[in-house]
Amino acid sequence: MEPLMLPMMMYGKFRGVRVKRDAEGNTVKKMLKGKEASVKEKVWIIHKEESGDAGVYPSVNHIYVHTGKGGRRLSKPAEALKEKWEALASMWAHDTAWQMTEKEKIVVEMIAHFPDESRDRDTNNVFKLLMDALNKIIYDDDHFALPRVMDFKTVAPGEKPFFELYIYRKADEDEILQQRLYGQEMMVDERRVNQSLPGVG
Image (tube, rainbow, N blue to C red; front, top):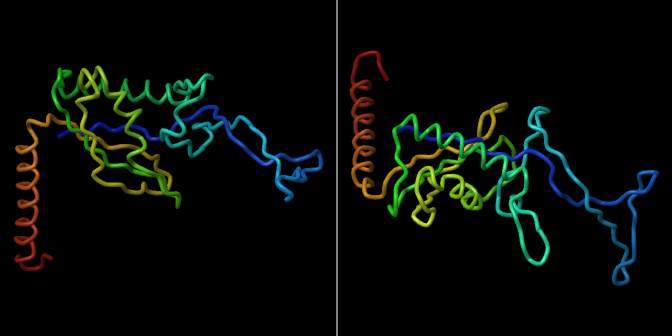
């Protein structure tokens, strides 16, 4: 089964908060409920992929911007990543002869290859944007998508983080699982044969 490989991180301009400092670089303070507290200010933070920036993980907390009156929309970095995912998914569908399904359950297995850093990330938090990106390419309605986190790993130093997806029809699940089990058994038998040969093992 050919996996669909997708880049993980968003890049661009993000709204953030930082401690406010005066002209001399000192932290600005104020009294809050009888205690001294640092003053925070909203700023724009720019993440550039070409400069080696690690980027921003596309969790639900980072893909939206508020539009007022309780509304929200995708941020420009999220839209850019979604468009990149859509293009790669279309290429994958073409290369594998996948036809968009209609009203059929589709399994989307995901292995997350996280950056080489200590920060923990929630793998399930990315499914909203990911399932939307596959809509009208892999399936006709993401209501029929069955996302599953299979594993998470860490990329090697210097390697860019990515998502590894395995996509198949729910109706084919039993056959695919049997193929995987057969493949594992073949690998075990091969190792046993190699171990039994003189000078091998």
